[in-house]
Image (cartoon, rainbow, N blue to C red; front, side, top):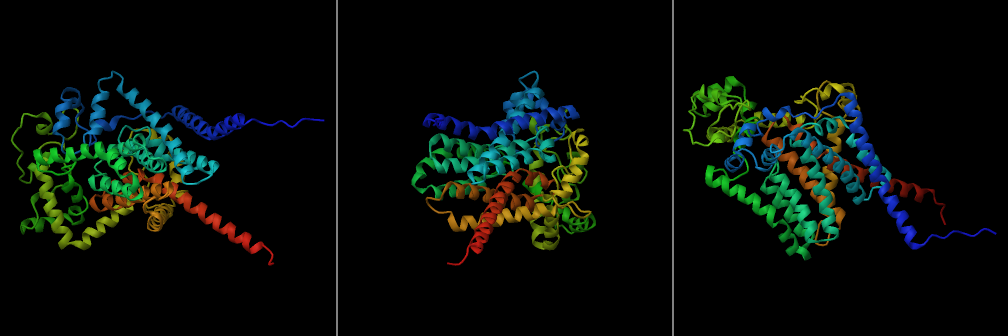
Length: 484
């Protein structure tokens, strides 16, 4: 007679742990394998944008005047340029950043898997969706592109995951991790400003009312740092924000909504300033051509340099603060007096928002290695059905995620809310904020704004599909049961 083999409680725990770690291990292996394949295809880690992106300080100044340049920075939050400047202390800084981005890619696929698991999705579905997302053309390109877009995407995913984990088991460590990620976003991207951070804090306080002291203690440092940047910019430059470029950014929507001929007429009538005859964010020589005088030298290279030896233009020149204010006045006049034209430009911004993030690619040659794959992905997955650039399936997914998230918040966001609700509330707030602020305040590369929230859209849509499937299955079973 055979004897049944009974496993001990300890062995069952070990087997359960191995089973739980099987999917993350598989995802990590698949991600590293994909990186190896990309190298065989000819992919390289691209750093060329460092000398052309207006968000990056002239590399020469970051090497020779790092602390001074960070202190006088007024167009961007300081953290991204601080990280770049610190990396220049390493002789092989491009290789260092490549390793960092590989680490970010590995973290993203694992966090997206964990996020979907926390939202109640099965392991297999969570793993498949995380893997497919990591293999999308935009992720393949941006994770090999030295700019702050991909780190922002990873941080947004981390924020959604950390929001639920903190709510499930509130602790100072988890709170510092959650609000630390939020602080990173606000100190790196002008897309995430103080109102967004305050809204996140309020949502967390509502859900964790009994732990409000812990919430306030956890958010104190990032909030203080952000407020400190606001205060510094307000005191030194009269700009209570992390950026002095708001007027120039909005001008890309409002001012450029009007034909140049109409702008010339309005400038002649004294209703608009002459800066509105110039394309926003242009080099200073174009503004000088319409009568703008440069500010007197300050002795600070960051504030005085116009076109440095390692940068095509320096938007941190102090003159741009005055230019941006002139644009801001013109923006408001156009919004109130040419509202239809402004809203039409906002519509173009939304069309750009729902385009592929690989559209108008600014990198080197990596896009050429996956051009055919990108072409079909955009048409099949995004639903770019016509000659335009809008992905209709993408629009539907974004609207579905936003609507489902709002319904979830209205129904369940209250004191003592479960971690899933808080995660969805964080995601919904971020989707709403990015989709509104990004498109009403700028147009041109709005697909970069949407890129960073794509993991949140994917996760919420997956939850909606799962719930719909369960309801359909429950109804089918109910109908199939014979009457008693």
